[in-house]
Length: 305
Ligand SMILES: NC(=O)c1ccc[n+]([C@@H]2O[C@H](COP(=O)([O-])OP(=O)(O)OC[C@H]3O[C@@H](n4cnc5c(N)ncnc54)[C@H](OP(=O)(O)O)[C@@H]3O)[C@@H](O)[C@H]2O)c1
Image (tube, rainbow, N blue to C red):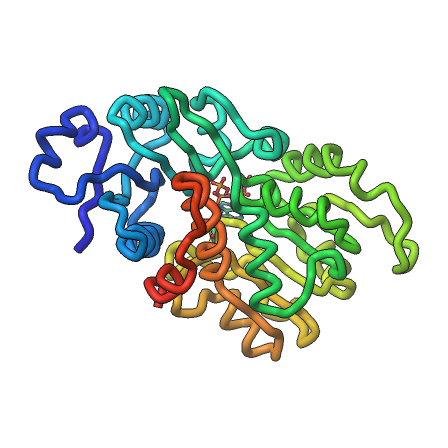
């Protein structure tokens, strides 16, 4: 059983981790965090590169985040990852934010350097690599429907799709206003003409079955960037009947056992993939930011099983 640390451990860190070797200098902050596979993957990378440090999970509630980031910096950590629900809130608690991450409005990686905390976002490029690896396609050729567009990961993916000039992007979010705001931010990326039909290249739609049905008829790639599926009994974010054989379904949830969405995709004859390839690539990019050297991809992939 891996040890999960808390804010109270951080307040008494030297004493609580006196016997831990190599010392913990990296970690992931989440609420919940037990599901995270980043510790297994990053510890494999550290071992492979002979770096005498460990990476640990931290259960941190939203109202503890600011203090946790400050304490971790003071404790001379090398860096952090952020998972649900901290990616957007964390932006306010770092000293500097890389330009792309600032536009996205969310960070998934922090680098502590020379007394400062620097925020980055590796989710978008990690996602792009994962889609190429899983489906042998490039984002620019796709009509994409993104569920969970208002979350930290969803915003990063939407920006990546826009930068790659994808054919169409449909933004869907439980809280519709967040999808509308994002559509306004991304409008300039979609102003150019493309080959396909008269439909708008960028839309925000309400999370309603009839609206989804209309859009899914002209969608190639469906992405689940909601947190639905994190708990094994969570319902599928899409009704089974709306999934067709021509769809590619990318579910960001990182579980080997198929989520309800991926099980429905398989039953419908659609291609589907879980979030492990994205976890791998976003984690490799974070490792490269912390250590300024290539990440050992094979060892990290093997650790994810
Ligand atoms: N594979 C990877 O490498 C990778 C990387 C990043 C994230 N992820 C996964 O992506 C998911 C989102 O992460 P995040 O950091 O973006 O979290 P987040 O910032 O907390 O955003 C959560 C998103 O899920 C939506 N949501 C939550 N509960 C919902 C429900 N019951 N029905 C419909 N929508 C719901 C939220 O909608 P509202 O805006 O309406 O609240 C929001 O869009 C998580 O499952 C995370 O594990 C995976």
